Length: 305
Image 1 (cartoon, one colour):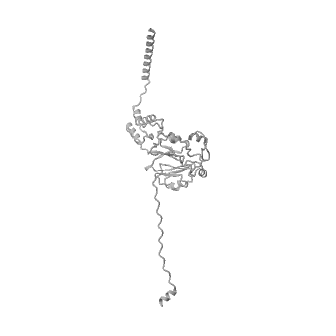
Image 2 (cartoon, rainbow, N blue to C red):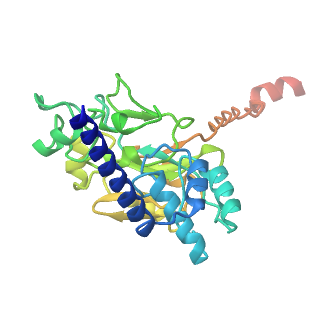
Image 3 (cartoon, rainbow, N blue to C red):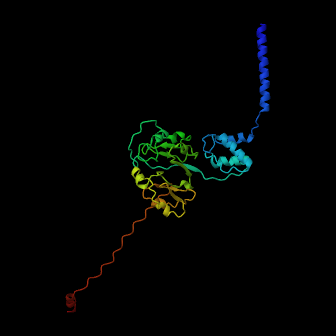
């Protein structure tokens, strides 16, 4: 019995000493956390999508607090929460936040089965990353969508799905938060974040093929051939041709859509624009009444008689 009591006392003493040591260490090496970190974290949506450029919402909160102490949080934006969340953060931290236009993911490839025929069959791991590492994929275009759905798996908001008829991803604008996770997941970088635009209207080149015109056209009937017609017709210097493919700068584009009408392959597209009414057919010209036939000399003679 004495041995049991001694063991209990010894263990109790060890536990007490360990608790005292831990208490002293915790006090000596304690790190004071800014209470604003928790407050900002509660405002952020908690999606941890990485769209802000940080590993998660905690990293974004730390950057916002640090920026507020420095006097500016310019360049920091939560794409999921948008302007509403950033406004609440700005009010909490007592600092102004710049208004940024909401963005949406755009798939810059229109190489459906109809436009881009298959020339090979891939039999391997069904991911875009794996297929891309093996080569050009199942079509002759080494730049277009592979259709395995890596972007779908990366999206936490169910905003992307693969159209079974075209084999291409489609973005649900109402669900898309512009976090950019799909763009990061695409190994060919065909998904881009672009401004939603007024009334959801956008103009962009639905192709990223860098091959020369003849090669690109052979691989896909709606590929950009880099002809430069769109660039010439644009009065706002919004279009550039680089690596044999056109690109529309959404910061300069005034959405006059003249470039879309000029594109010979249909690679330039416009979204959510009203359908132009067909011009009424020109009215048929009214025929002038036939001039009376000249009377013959014989008729005149009869009338004179």
